[in-house]
Amino acid sequence: MRKNGSSASPHTVTLAMRWSNFQRRYAPYIFISPFFILFLIFGLYPTLFSLYMSFQSWTPTDGWGRWKFVGLENYTFTLTDPMFWRAMWNTVWLGIFSGLPQHLIAIPLAFVIHMVLGRFKTLATAVYFLPYITSSVAIALIFNTLFATNNGVINLVIAQLNTWPVLGWFLPDENINWFLNSTIKYGIAMVVVWQFTGWNTLLYLSAIQAIPKDLYEAAAVDGANRYQQFRYITLPMLRPMMFFAVSLTIIGNMQLFEQPFVLLNGGTSAATQGGQTAAMYMYRTAFEWLEMGTAASIAWVLFIFIGILTYLNNLIFGRTARGEV
Amino acid sequence: MLESANKTSLGGLLLRISGYILLALGAVATLAPFYFMFVFATHQRSEIFGFPPPTWFGEHFWTNYQILVQKIPFWRAYWNNLYLALMTTIPSLFFCSLAGYAFAMYEFRWRERLFGVVMATLLVPAILNLIPFYLLIYQIGWINQPKALWVPAMAGAVGIFMMRQYILSSIPKELIDAARIDGCSEFQIYWRIVLPLIRPALGTLGLITFIGSWNRFADVNVIMRTQETKTLPVVLRTLQGATDVEWGAIMAGTALLVLPLLLVFALAAKQLMEGLTAGAVKS
Image (cartoon, rainbow over all chains, first blue to last red; front, side):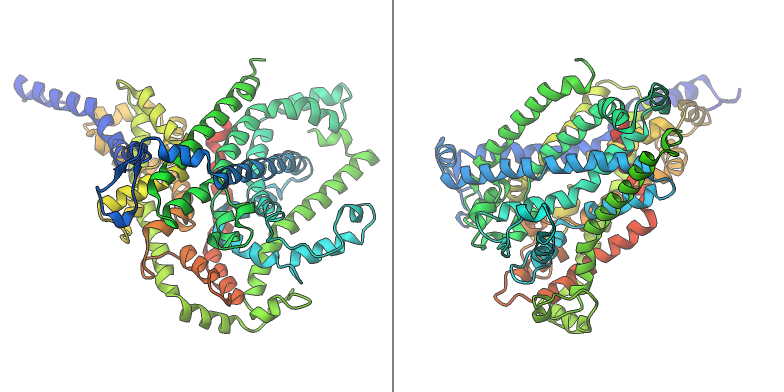
Protein backbone atom coordinates (compact mmCIF):
# COMPACT_ATOMS: atom_id res chain seq x y z
CA MET A 1 0.00 0.00 0.00
CA ARG A 2 1.34 3.39 -0.94
CA LYS A 3 1.79 6.17 1.54
CA ASN A 4 -0.91 8.40 0.23
CA GLY A 5 -0.56 12.13 0.66
CA SER A 6 -3.48 14.13 1.91
CA SER A 7 -4.09 15.34 -1.67
CA ALA A 8 -5.24 11.91 -2.86
CA SER A 9 -9.00 11.44 -2.94
CA PRO A 10 -10.56 8.66 -0.85
CA HIS A 11 -11.60 6.97 -4.09
CA THR A 12 -8.05 6.43 -5.37
CA VAL A 13 -6.99 5.22 -1.96
CA THR A 14 -9.50 2.39 -1.98
CA LEU A 15 -8.64 1.46 -5.57
CA ALA A 16 -4.93 1.28 -4.79
CA MET A 17 -5.70 -0.71 -1.67
CA ARG A 18 -7.90 -3.08 -3.56
CA TRP A 19 -5.23 -3.70 -6.21
CA SER A 20 -2.65 -4.16 -3.52
CA ASN A 21 -4.80 -6.67 -1.67
CA PHE A 22 -5.75 -8.43 -4.87
CA GLN A 23 -2.24 -8.98 -6.13
CA ARG A 24 -1.07 -9.88 -2.66
CA ARG A 25 -3.74 -12.51 -2.41
CA TYR A 26 -3.18 -14.14 -5.78
CA ALA A 27 0.57 -13.62 -6.21
CA PRO A 28 1.55 -16.86 -4.41
CA TYR A 29 -0.73 -18.92 -6.64
CA ILE A 30 0.75 -17.33 -9.73
CA PHE A 31 4.28 -17.84 -8.42
CA ILE A 32 3.80 -21.55 -7.84
CA SER A 33 1.75 -22.12 -11.00
CA PRO A 34 4.65 -22.93 -13.40
CA PHE A 35 5.45 -26.06 -11.41
CA PHE A 36 1.84 -27.21 -11.38
CA ILE A 37 1.23 -26.46 -15.05
CA LEU A 38 4.34 -28.40 -16.07
CA PHE A 39 3.51 -31.20 -13.64
CA LEU A 40 -0.03 -31.57 -14.99
CA ILE A 41 1.12 -31.65 -18.61
CA PHE A 42 4.36 -33.60 -18.39
CA GLY A 43 3.87 -35.60 -15.20
CA LEU A 44 0.31 -36.39 -14.25
CA TYR A 45 -1.34 -36.53 -17.66
CA PRO A 46 1.20 -38.94 -19.22
CA THR A 47 1.12 -41.12 -16.10
CA LEU A 48 -2.66 -41.44 -16.25
CA PHE A 49 -2.48 -41.94 -19.97
CA SER A 50 0.00 -44.78 -19.50
CA LEU A 51 -2.48 -46.44 -17.16
CA TYR A 52 -4.96 -46.32 -20.04
CA MET A 53 -2.27 -47.47 -22.45
CA SER A 54 -1.48 -50.48 -20.28
CA PHE A 55 -4.88 -51.91 -21.29
CA GLN A 56 -4.24 -51.31 -25.00
CA SER A 57 -2.08 -52.86 -27.66
CA TRP A 58 -0.12 -50.26 -29.59
CA THR A 59 3.14 -49.82 -31.44
CA PRO A 60 4.31 -46.46 -32.87
CA THR A 61 4.06 -47.72 -36.49
CA ASP A 62 0.30 -48.19 -35.98
CA GLY A 63 -0.08 -44.42 -35.97
CA TRP A 64 -1.34 -42.22 -33.15
CA GLY A 65 -4.78 -43.09 -31.85
CA ARG A 66 -4.97 -46.54 -33.40
CA TRP A 67 -4.74 -48.54 -30.23
CA LYS A 68 -6.62 -51.72 -29.58
CA PHE A 69 -8.27 -52.53 -26.24
CA VAL A 70 -6.94 -55.82 -24.93
CA GLY A 71 -8.20 -55.82 -21.36
CA LEU A 72 -5.81 -57.34 -18.86
CA GLU A 73 -3.75 -59.11 -21.51
CA ASN A 74 -0.65 -56.92 -21.02
CA TYR A 75 -0.71 -57.56 -17.29
CA THR A 76 -1.23 -61.30 -17.59
CA PHE A 77 1.55 -61.41 -20.17
CA THR A 78 3.95 -59.45 -17.94
CA LEU A 79 3.12 -61.37 -14.79
CA THR A 80 3.62 -64.74 -16.50
CA ASP A 81 6.68 -63.68 -18.48
CA PRO A 82 9.81 -65.51 -17.22
CA MET A 83 12.06 -62.77 -18.63
CA PHE A 84 10.21 -60.18 -16.58
CA TRP A 85 10.60 -62.22 -13.39
CA ARG A 86 14.27 -62.78 -14.10
CA ALA A 87 14.65 -59.01 -14.52
CA MET A 88 12.77 -58.48 -11.24
CA TRP A 89 15.05 -60.97 -9.51
CA ASN A 90 18.10 -59.11 -10.90
CA THR A 91 16.62 -55.84 -9.66
CA VAL A 92 16.05 -57.14 -6.14
CA TRP A 93 19.48 -58.83 -6.06
CA LEU A 94 21.16 -55.63 -7.24
CA GLY A 95 19.02 -53.60 -4.88
CA ILE A 96 20.50 -55.49 -1.95
CA PHE A 97 24.07 -56.10 -3.11
CA SER A 98 24.60 -52.68 -4.59
CA GLY A 99 22.70 -50.96 -1.79
CA LEU A 100 23.78 -52.53 1.49
CA PRO A 101 27.57 -52.16 0.94
CA GLN A 102 27.11 -48.45 0.21
CA HIS A 103 25.85 -47.90 3.74
CA LEU A 104 28.12 -50.44 5.43
CA ILE A 105 31.11 -48.58 3.97
CA ALA A 106 29.75 -45.04 4.18
CA ILE A 107 28.85 -44.99 7.91
CA PRO A 108 32.29 -46.03 9.25
CA LEU A 109 34.00 -43.98 6.54
CA ALA A 110 32.11 -40.85 7.57
CA PHE A 111 32.94 -41.58 11.22
CA VAL A 112 36.64 -41.98 10.45
CA ILE A 113 36.69 -38.80 8.35
CA HIS A 114 35.09 -36.95 11.22
CA MET A 115 37.50 -38.41 13.77
CA VAL A 116 40.91 -38.15 12.15
CA LEU A 117 40.65 -35.34 9.62
CA GLY A 118 40.62 -31.68 10.46
CA ARG A 119 41.53 -29.28 7.74
CA PHE A 120 41.29 -31.87 4.97
CA LYS A 121 37.78 -32.99 5.80
CA THR A 122 36.20 -31.20 2.86
CA LEU A 123 38.91 -32.30 0.44
CA ALA A 124 38.58 -35.96 1.45
CA THR A 125 34.79 -35.87 1.22
CA ALA A 126 35.03 -34.17 -2.18
CA VAL A 127 37.24 -37.00 -3.45
CA TYR A 128 34.78 -39.65 -2.31
CA PHE A 129 31.91 -37.62 -3.68
CA LEU A 130 33.38 -37.23 -7.17
CA PRO A 131 31.75 -40.34 -8.74
CA TYR A 132 28.31 -39.04 -7.75
CA ILE A 133 28.52 -36.04 -10.07
CA THR A 134 29.94 -38.11 -12.93
CA SER A 135 27.71 -39.32 -15.76
CA SER A 136 26.56 -42.92 -15.18
CA VAL A 137 27.16 -43.62 -18.85
CA ALA A 138 30.75 -42.40 -18.57
CA ILE A 139 31.27 -44.50 -15.46
CA ALA A 140 29.85 -47.64 -17.05
CA LEU A 141 32.01 -47.11 -20.14
CA ILE A 142 35.14 -46.71 -18.00
CA PHE A 143 34.35 -49.85 -16.01
CA ASN A 144 33.67 -51.70 -19.25
CA THR A 145 37.38 -51.38 -20.06
CA LEU A 146 38.47 -52.08 -16.48
CA PHE A 147 36.43 -55.31 -16.46
CA ALA A 148 38.30 -56.83 -19.46
CA THR A 149 38.90 -60.54 -18.85
CA ASN A 150 42.53 -60.69 -19.99
CA ASN A 151 44.74 -57.90 -18.68
CA GLY A 152 41.79 -55.93 -17.36
CA VAL A 153 42.81 -53.70 -14.47
CA ILE A 154 40.28 -55.18 -12.03
CA ASN A 155 41.32 -58.78 -12.80
CA LEU A 156 44.97 -57.81 -12.39
CA VAL A 157 44.27 -56.26 -9.01
CA ILE A 158 42.40 -59.41 -7.95
CA ALA A 159 45.34 -61.55 -9.15
CA GLN A 160 47.66 -59.38 -7.08
CA LEU A 161 45.47 -59.66 -3.96
CA ASN A 162 45.30 -63.41 -4.55
CA THR A 163 48.99 -63.69 -3.60
CA TRP A 164 48.27 -62.22 -0.15
CA PRO A 165 47.70 -64.54 2.79
CA VAL A 166 44.13 -65.13 4.02
CA LEU A 167 42.58 -62.80 1.44
CA GLY A 168 43.91 -65.05 -1.33
CA TRP A 169 41.93 -68.02 -0.06
CA PHE A 170 38.69 -66.29 -0.99
CA LEU A 171 39.72 -65.13 -4.43
CA PRO A 172 39.63 -67.17 -7.64
CA ASP A 173 42.95 -68.17 -9.22
CA GLU A 174 41.83 -67.55 -12.78
CA ASN A 175 40.79 -64.40 -14.54
CA ILE A 176 37.12 -63.66 -14.04
CA ASN A 177 34.98 -63.18 -17.12
CA TRP A 178 32.75 -60.37 -15.87
CA PHE A 179 30.40 -60.55 -18.83
CA LEU A 180 28.65 -63.85 -18.10
CA ASN A 181 25.11 -64.40 -16.88
CA SER A 182 26.54 -65.63 -13.61
CA THR A 183 29.04 -62.81 -13.01
CA ILE A 184 27.62 -59.64 -14.55
CA LYS A 185 25.55 -58.75 -11.48
CA TYR A 186 28.68 -58.56 -9.33
CA GLY A 187 30.20 -56.17 -11.84
CA ILE A 188 27.11 -53.95 -11.93
CA ALA A 189 26.92 -53.96 -8.13
CA MET A 190 30.58 -52.95 -7.93
CA VAL A 191 29.97 -50.00 -10.27
CA VAL A 192 26.91 -48.82 -8.33
CA VAL A 193 28.67 -49.12 -4.98
CA TRP A 194 31.63 -47.18 -6.35
CA GLN A 195 29.35 -44.49 -7.72
CA PHE A 196 27.10 -43.86 -4.71
CA THR A 197 29.11 -44.65 -1.56
CA GLY A 198 30.52 -41.11 -1.60
CA TRP A 199 27.05 -39.60 -1.66
CA ASN A 200 26.03 -41.60 1.39
CA THR A 201 29.31 -40.75 3.10
CA LEU A 202 28.50 -37.09 2.60
CA LEU A 203 25.00 -37.57 4.02
CA TYR A 204 26.25 -39.45 7.08
CA LEU A 205 29.12 -37.03 7.64
CA SER A 206 26.76 -34.08 7.68
CA ALA A 207 24.56 -35.92 10.19
CA ILE A 208 27.55 -36.85 12.36
CA GLN A 209 28.69 -33.23 12.40
CA ALA A 210 25.26 -32.21 13.64
CA ILE A 211 25.58 -34.44 16.74
CA PRO A 212 26.22 -32.24 19.80
CA LYS A 213 29.83 -32.51 20.95
CA ASP A 214 29.00 -32.57 24.64
CA LEU A 215 27.42 -35.99 24.16
CA TYR A 216 30.84 -37.38 23.27
CA GLU A 217 32.52 -35.41 26.01
CA ALA A 218 30.15 -36.77 28.61
CA ALA A 219 30.79 -40.28 27.32
CA ALA A 220 34.55 -39.75 27.37
CA VAL A 221 34.36 -38.58 30.96
CA ASP A 222 32.44 -41.76 31.78
CA GLY A 223 35.30 -43.72 30.22
CA ALA A 224 33.77 -44.74 26.90
CA ASN A 225 36.34 -45.61 24.24
CA ARG A 226 35.94 -44.65 20.58
CA TYR A 227 34.26 -47.85 19.59
CA GLN A 228 31.74 -47.41 22.41
CA GLN A 229 31.21 -43.79 21.43
CA PHE A 230 30.54 -44.90 17.86
CA ARG A 231 28.27 -47.74 18.95
CA TYR A 232 26.25 -45.95 21.63
CA ILE A 233 26.22 -42.33 20.49
CA THR A 234 26.93 -42.01 16.77
CA LEU A 235 24.89 -44.96 15.52
CA PRO A 236 21.69 -44.17 17.45
CA MET A 237 21.93 -40.48 16.55
CA LEU A 238 22.35 -41.43 12.89
CA ARG A 239 19.05 -43.29 12.71
CA PRO A 240 16.99 -40.56 11.06
CA MET A 241 19.69 -40.07 8.43
CA MET A 242 19.95 -43.83 7.90
CA PHE A 243 16.24 -43.95 7.22
CA PHE A 244 16.50 -41.05 4.78
CA ALA A 245 19.59 -42.40 3.00
CA VAL A 246 18.25 -45.96 2.79
CA SER A 247 14.95 -44.66 1.39
CA LEU A 248 16.86 -42.83 -1.34
CA THR A 249 18.88 -45.97 -2.06
CA ILE A 250 15.74 -48.10 -2.36
CA ILE A 251 14.06 -45.69 -4.75
CA GLY A 252 17.28 -45.31 -6.76
CA ASN A 253 18.19 -48.98 -6.92
CA MET A 254 14.72 -50.16 -7.92
CA GLN A 255 14.98 -48.01 -11.04
CA LEU A 256 18.57 -48.90 -11.88
CA PHE A 257 18.93 -48.44 -15.60
CA GLU A 258 21.95 -46.67 -17.04
CA GLN A 259 24.70 -48.79 -15.48
CA PRO A 260 23.29 -52.18 -16.57
CA PHE A 261 22.18 -50.74 -19.92
CA VAL A 262 25.69 -49.60 -20.83
CA LEU A 263 27.52 -52.56 -19.28
CA LEU A 264 25.22 -54.87 -21.26
CA ASN A 265 25.79 -52.89 -24.44
CA GLY A 266 22.16 -51.84 -24.66
CA GLY A 267 20.92 -55.41 -24.29
CA THR A 268 23.05 -57.05 -27.01
CA SER A 269 25.52 -58.58 -24.54
CA ALA A 270 25.46 -62.35 -24.00
CA ALA A 271 24.99 -61.64 -20.29
CA THR A 272 21.85 -59.55 -20.79
CA GLN A 273 19.54 -62.06 -19.11
CA GLY A 274 21.78 -62.26 -16.08
CA GLY A 275 22.08 -58.54 -15.55
CA GLN A 276 19.17 -56.62 -16.98
CA THR A 277 16.99 -54.84 -14.44
CA ALA A 278 13.22 -54.40 -14.55
CA ALA A 279 13.66 -50.79 -15.69
CA MET A 280 15.92 -51.92 -18.51
CA TYR A 281 13.50 -54.68 -19.50
CA MET A 282 10.69 -52.14 -19.57
CA TYR A 283 12.82 -49.85 -21.72
CA ARG A 284 13.62 -52.62 -24.19
CA THR A 285 10.00 -53.74 -24.36
CA ALA A 286 9.02 -50.20 -25.34
CA PHE A 287 11.85 -49.11 -27.58
CA GLU A 288 13.37 -52.31 -28.91
CA TRP A 289 10.27 -54.46 -29.35
CA LEU A 290 7.97 -51.41 -29.59
CA GLU A 291 5.29 -53.00 -27.39
CA MET A 292 4.13 -49.81 -25.69
CA GLY A 293 1.10 -51.35 -23.97
CA THR A 294 3.14 -54.17 -22.44
CA ALA A 295 5.85 -51.73 -21.40
CA ALA A 296 3.25 -49.53 -19.73
CA SER A 297 2.00 -52.55 -17.76
CA ILE A 298 5.59 -53.30 -16.64
CA ALA A 299 5.94 -49.71 -15.47
CA TRP A 300 2.78 -50.00 -13.38
CA VAL A 301 3.74 -53.35 -11.87
CA LEU A 302 7.14 -51.89 -10.97
CA PHE A 303 5.51 -48.77 -9.59
CA ILE A 304 3.28 -50.80 -7.28
CA PHE A 305 6.27 -52.92 -6.23
CA ILE A 306 8.33 -49.84 -5.33
CA GLY A 307 5.32 -48.39 -3.53
CA ILE A 308 5.03 -51.50 -1.36
CA LEU A 309 8.77 -51.49 -0.61
CA THR A 310 8.69 -47.82 0.38
CA TYR A 311 5.67 -48.47 2.57
CA LEU A 312 7.38 -51.43 4.29
CA ASN A 313 10.53 -49.36 4.76
CA ASN A 314 8.41 -46.69 6.43
CA LEU A 315 6.60 -49.20 8.57
CA ILE A 316 9.71 -51.03 9.76
CA PHE A 317 12.34 -48.30 9.97
CA GLY A 318 10.37 -45.07 9.84
CA ARG A 319 9.10 -45.38 13.42
CA THR A 320 12.49 -46.06 14.93
CA ALA A 321 13.96 -43.27 12.81
CA ARG A 322 11.49 -40.83 14.30
CA GLY A 323 12.39 -42.10 17.73
CA GLU A 324 8.96 -43.53 18.48
CA VAL A 325 10.31 -46.88 19.63
CA MET B 1 37.33 -31.91 21.93
CA LEU B 2 36.96 -35.67 21.89
CA GLU B 3 40.36 -36.35 20.28
CA SER B 4 42.07 -35.00 23.36
CA ALA B 5 40.80 -37.91 25.43
CA ASN B 6 42.69 -40.45 23.37
CA LYS B 7 45.43 -38.48 21.68
CA THR B 8 48.18 -39.36 24.10
CA SER B 9 47.55 -43.09 24.33
CA LEU B 10 49.22 -45.58 21.99
CA GLY B 11 45.86 -47.09 21.13
CA GLY B 12 44.59 -43.70 20.03
CA LEU B 13 47.61 -43.21 17.80
CA LEU B 14 47.23 -46.64 16.20
CA LEU B 15 43.56 -45.97 15.63
CA ARG B 16 44.40 -42.67 14.00
CA ILE B 17 47.02 -44.25 11.71
CA SER B 18 44.74 -47.08 10.64
CA GLY B 19 42.11 -44.42 9.95
CA TYR B 20 44.49 -42.60 7.61
CA ILE B 21 45.35 -45.85 5.82
CA LEU B 22 41.67 -46.69 5.37
CA LEU B 23 40.95 -43.21 4.01
CA ALA B 24 43.91 -43.38 1.63
CA LEU B 25 42.85 -46.78 0.29
CA GLY B 26 39.33 -45.49 -0.26
CA ALA B 27 40.64 -42.43 -2.07
CA VAL B 28 42.81 -44.57 -4.36
CA ALA B 29 39.87 -46.85 -5.18
CA THR B 30 37.71 -43.80 -5.92
CA LEU B 31 40.21 -41.96 -8.08
CA ALA B 32 41.70 -44.93 -9.96
CA PRO B 33 38.89 -45.27 -12.54
CA PHE B 34 39.20 -41.56 -13.38
CA TYR B 35 42.95 -41.95 -13.72
CA PHE B 36 42.60 -44.93 -16.06
CA MET B 37 40.02 -43.05 -18.12
CA PHE B 38 42.55 -40.29 -18.81
CA VAL B 39 45.38 -42.77 -19.39
CA PHE B 40 43.36 -44.95 -21.75
CA ALA B 41 42.27 -41.86 -23.66
CA THR B 42 45.88 -41.55 -24.81
CA HIS B 43 46.30 -45.16 -25.92
CA GLN B 44 45.16 -47.29 -28.82
CA ARG B 45 42.82 -50.20 -28.34
CA SER B 46 45.58 -52.81 -28.71
CA GLU B 47 47.59 -51.16 -25.94
CA ILE B 48 44.63 -50.83 -23.55
CA PHE B 49 44.00 -54.57 -23.56
CA GLY B 50 47.64 -55.64 -23.85
CA PHE B 51 49.83 -56.89 -21.04
CA PRO B 52 50.49 -55.00 -18.93
CA PRO B 53 47.69 -52.45 -19.44
CA PRO B 54 49.01 -48.90 -19.65
CA THR B 55 49.46 -47.12 -16.34
CA TRP B 56 50.94 -43.93 -17.74
CA PHE B 57 49.92 -41.53 -20.51
CA GLY B 58 50.67 -42.55 -24.09
CA GLU B 59 50.85 -40.59 -27.30
CA HIS B 60 47.69 -41.54 -29.14
CA PHE B 61 45.23 -39.00 -27.81
CA TRP B 62 45.25 -37.25 -31.18
CA THR B 63 44.59 -40.54 -33.03
CA ASN B 64 41.70 -41.26 -30.69
CA TYR B 65 40.35 -37.77 -31.17
CA GLN B 66 40.46 -38.20 -34.96
CA ILE B 67 38.51 -41.47 -34.72
CA LEU B 68 36.01 -39.76 -32.44
CA VAL B 69 35.21 -36.78 -34.69
CA GLN B 70 35.14 -39.05 -37.73
CA LYS B 71 32.71 -41.62 -36.30
CA ILE B 72 30.32 -39.30 -34.48
CA PRO B 73 29.37 -35.60 -34.73
CA PHE B 74 31.37 -35.03 -31.56
CA TRP B 75 31.30 -31.24 -31.25
CA ARG B 76 27.70 -31.07 -32.35
CA ALA B 77 26.85 -33.47 -29.53
CA TYR B 78 28.97 -31.42 -27.16
CA TRP B 79 27.05 -28.29 -28.10
CA ASN B 80 23.75 -30.16 -27.67
CA ASN B 81 24.86 -31.10 -24.16
CA LEU B 82 25.72 -27.54 -23.28
CA TYR B 83 22.55 -26.17 -24.84
CA LEU B 84 20.34 -28.62 -22.95
CA ALA B 85 22.11 -27.92 -19.67
CA LEU B 86 21.86 -24.14 -20.02
CA MET B 87 18.28 -24.16 -21.25
CA THR B 88 17.30 -26.27 -18.24
CA THR B 89 19.31 -24.33 -15.69
CA ILE B 90 18.37 -20.73 -16.49
CA PRO B 91 14.55 -21.05 -16.38
CA SER B 92 14.91 -23.40 -13.39
CA LEU B 93 16.60 -20.71 -11.35
CA PHE B 94 13.75 -18.34 -12.06
CA PHE B 95 10.74 -20.64 -11.63
CA CYS B 96 12.11 -22.58 -8.64
CA SER B 97 13.08 -19.47 -6.70
CA LEU B 98 9.73 -17.86 -7.49
CA ALA B 99 7.79 -20.87 -6.25
CA GLY B 100 10.13 -21.39 -3.30
CA TYR B 101 9.59 -17.76 -2.32
CA ALA B 102 5.81 -18.17 -2.46
CA PHE B 103 5.92 -21.32 -0.29
CA ALA B 104 8.27 -19.69 2.21
CA MET B 105 6.84 -16.21 2.60
CA TYR B 106 3.11 -16.22 1.91
CA GLU B 107 0.17 -17.47 3.89
CA PHE B 108 -2.34 -18.88 1.48
CA ARG B 109 -5.05 -21.45 1.33
CA TRP B 110 -3.87 -25.03 0.66
CA ARG B 111 -0.23 -23.98 1.01
CA GLU B 112 0.76 -27.11 2.95
CA ARG B 113 -1.20 -29.41 0.71
CA LEU B 114 0.20 -27.93 -2.48
CA PHE B 115 3.71 -28.14 -1.08
CA GLY B 116 2.97 -31.75 -0.21
CA VAL B 117 2.13 -32.38 -3.86
CA VAL B 118 5.46 -30.83 -4.90
CA MET B 119 7.35 -33.09 -2.50
CA ALA B 120 5.34 -36.16 -3.47
CA THR B 121 6.51 -35.87 -7.07
CA LEU B 122 10.01 -36.60 -5.75
CA LEU B 123 8.86 -40.01 -4.56
CA VAL B 124 7.67 -41.14 -7.98
CA PRO B 125 10.53 -43.06 -9.61
CA ALA B 126 11.54 -40.98 -12.63
CA ILE B 127 12.25 -43.91 -14.91
CA LEU B 128 8.63 -45.06 -14.71
CA ASN B 129 7.60 -41.82 -16.34
CA LEU B 130 9.81 -42.59 -19.33
CA ILE B 131 7.24 -44.40 -21.48
CA PRO B 132 4.29 -42.09 -20.76
CA PHE B 133 6.59 -39.11 -21.31
CA TYR B 134 7.75 -40.53 -24.64
CA LEU B 135 4.14 -41.11 -25.69
CA LEU B 136 3.22 -37.52 -24.86
CA ILE B 137 6.21 -36.11 -26.74
CA TYR B 138 5.32 -38.35 -29.68
CA GLN B 139 1.72 -37.16 -29.51
CA ILE B 140 2.59 -33.46 -29.56
CA GLY B 141 5.25 -33.94 -32.23
CA TRP B 142 8.29 -32.85 -30.22
CA ILE B 143 10.47 -35.88 -31.04
CA ASN B 144 14.01 -34.72 -31.95
CA GLN B 145 13.34 -31.27 -30.50
CA PRO B 146 15.46 -30.12 -27.56
CA LYS B 147 12.52 -28.30 -25.99
CA ALA B 148 10.97 -31.71 -25.29
CA LEU B 149 13.78 -32.16 -22.79
CA TRP B 150 14.14 -28.76 -21.17
CA VAL B 151 10.59 -27.38 -21.04
CA PRO B 152 9.33 -30.12 -18.67
CA ALA B 153 12.43 -29.68 -16.47
CA MET B 154 12.00 -25.92 -15.92
CA ALA B 155 10.49 -26.10 -12.42
CA GLY B 156 11.66 -29.17 -10.53
CA ALA B 157 10.60 -30.12 -7.02
CA VAL B 158 14.18 -30.35 -5.73
CA GLY B 159 14.84 -26.77 -6.73
CA ILE B 160 11.61 -25.48 -5.18
CA PHE B 161 12.37 -27.32 -1.94
CA MET B 162 15.94 -25.97 -1.81
CA MET B 163 14.83 -22.40 -2.48
CA ARG B 164 12.05 -22.56 0.10
CA GLN B 165 14.44 -23.84 2.76
CA TYR B 166 17.01 -21.19 1.99
CA ILE B 167 14.52 -18.33 1.95
CA LEU B 168 12.93 -19.49 5.21
CA SER B 169 16.29 -19.53 6.93
CA SER B 170 17.78 -16.36 5.51
CA ILE B 171 15.10 -13.76 4.82
CA PRO B 172 13.12 -12.17 7.66
CA LYS B 173 9.42 -11.66 7.00
CA GLU B 174 9.74 -8.07 8.27
CA LEU B 175 11.92 -7.25 5.29
CA ILE B 176 9.16 -8.33 2.91
CA ASP B 177 6.56 -6.32 4.86
CA ALA B 178 8.80 -3.27 4.84
CA ALA B 179 9.19 -3.50 1.06
CA ARG B 180 5.44 -3.80 0.75
CA ILE B 181 4.87 -0.67 2.82
CA ASP B 182 7.38 1.12 0.59
CA GLY B 183 5.09 0.37 -2.32
CA CYS B 184 6.74 -2.59 -4.02
CA SER B 185 4.42 -4.91 -5.92
CA GLU B 186 4.64 -8.60 -5.05
CA PHE B 187 6.75 -9.41 -8.08
CA GLN B 188 8.99 -6.42 -7.43
CA ILE B 189 9.62 -7.71 -3.91
CA TYR B 190 10.75 -11.02 -5.38
CA TRP B 191 12.80 -9.45 -8.14
CA ARG B 192 14.47 -6.59 -6.24
CA ILE B 193 14.65 -7.85 -2.66
CA VAL B 194 14.55 -11.64 -2.62
CA LEU B 195 16.58 -12.55 -5.71
CA PRO B 196 19.70 -10.56 -4.74
CA LEU B 197 19.59 -12.05 -1.23
CA ILE B 198 19.43 -15.67 -2.35
CA ARG B 199 22.34 -15.52 -4.80
CA PRO B 200 24.38 -18.20 -2.98
CA ALA B 201 21.46 -20.64 -3.10
CA LEU B 202 20.87 -19.82 -6.76
CA GLY B 203 24.51 -20.65 -7.45
CA THR B 204 24.15 -24.02 -5.76
CA LEU B 205 20.88 -24.84 -7.50
CA GLY B 206 22.42 -23.77 -10.81
CA LEU B 207 25.31 -26.18 -10.31
CA ILE B 208 23.06 -29.07 -9.34
CA THR B 209 20.71 -28.51 -12.27
CA PHE B 210 23.56 -28.08 -14.72
CA ILE B 211 25.29 -31.27 -13.60
CA GLY B 212 22.04 -33.23 -13.69
CA SER B 213 21.20 -32.10 -17.22
CA TRP B 214 24.76 -32.60 -18.43
CA ASN B 215 24.60 -36.27 -17.39
CA ARG B 216 21.07 -37.02 -18.59
CA PHE B 217 20.76 -40.18 -20.63
CA ALA B 218 17.63 -42.38 -20.58
CA ASP B 219 15.05 -39.86 -21.78
CA VAL B 220 17.45 -38.12 -24.20
CA ASN B 221 18.16 -41.51 -25.71
CA VAL B 222 14.50 -42.07 -26.62
CA ILE B 223 13.50 -38.52 -27.56
CA MET B 224 16.53 -37.63 -29.70
CA ARG B 225 16.56 -40.10 -32.57
CA THR B 226 18.89 -38.42 -35.10
CA GLN B 227 22.68 -38.09 -34.83
CA GLU B 228 22.52 -34.29 -35.00
CA THR B 229 20.20 -33.96 -32.02
CA LYS B 230 21.81 -36.47 -29.65
CA THR B 231 23.81 -35.39 -26.63
CA LEU B 232 27.30 -36.60 -25.82
CA PRO B 233 26.48 -39.49 -23.44
CA VAL B 234 24.02 -40.83 -26.02
CA VAL B 235 26.42 -40.75 -29.00
CA LEU B 236 29.27 -42.15 -26.92
CA ARG B 237 27.01 -45.08 -26.07
CA THR B 238 26.39 -45.72 -29.79
CA LEU B 239 30.17 -46.11 -30.35
CA GLN B 240 30.07 -49.05 -27.95
CA GLY B 241 27.61 -50.88 -30.18
CA ALA B 242 30.02 -51.09 -33.13
CA THR B 243 31.72 -54.38 -34.06
CA ASP B 244 35.31 -53.16 -33.58
CA VAL B 245 34.86 -51.01 -30.52
CA GLU B 246 37.41 -48.20 -30.42
CA TRP B 247 37.86 -48.09 -26.66
CA GLY B 248 40.65 -45.55 -26.88
CA ALA B 249 38.38 -43.15 -28.74
CA ILE B 250 35.49 -43.85 -26.35
CA MET B 251 37.72 -43.08 -23.38
CA ALA B 252 38.88 -39.87 -25.06
CA GLY B 253 35.24 -38.84 -25.55
CA THR B 254 34.34 -39.86 -22.01
CA ALA B 255 37.25 -37.85 -20.64
CA LEU B 256 36.06 -34.79 -22.57
CA LEU B 257 32.55 -35.37 -21.21
CA VAL B 258 33.68 -35.70 -17.60
CA LEU B 259 36.39 -33.01 -17.61
CA PRO B 260 34.19 -29.87 -17.44
CA LEU B 261 32.34 -31.23 -14.42
CA LEU B 262 35.60 -32.12 -12.70
CA LEU B 263 36.74 -28.54 -13.22
CA VAL B 264 33.47 -27.09 -11.96
CA PHE B 265 33.61 -29.41 -8.97
CA ALA B 266 37.20 -28.43 -8.20
CA LEU B 267 36.05 -24.82 -7.93
CA ALA B 268 32.77 -25.29 -6.09
CA ALA B 269 32.92 -28.65 -4.29
CA LYS B 270 32.23 -27.22 -0.87
CA GLN B 271 29.27 -25.12 -1.96
CA LEU B 272 27.81 -28.02 -3.93
CA MET B 273 28.13 -30.57 -1.13
CA GLU B 274 26.72 -28.19 1.46
CA GLY B 275 23.79 -27.36 -0.80
CA LEU B 276 22.99 -31.01 -1.44
CA THR B 277 22.95 -31.93 2.23
CA ALA B 278 21.30 -28.77 3.59
CA GLY B 279 17.78 -30.13 3.18
CA ALA B 280 18.65 -33.65 4.24
CA VAL B 281 20.03 -32.71 7.64
CA LYS B 282 17.10 -30.59 8.65
CA SER B 283 14.41 -33.05 7.66
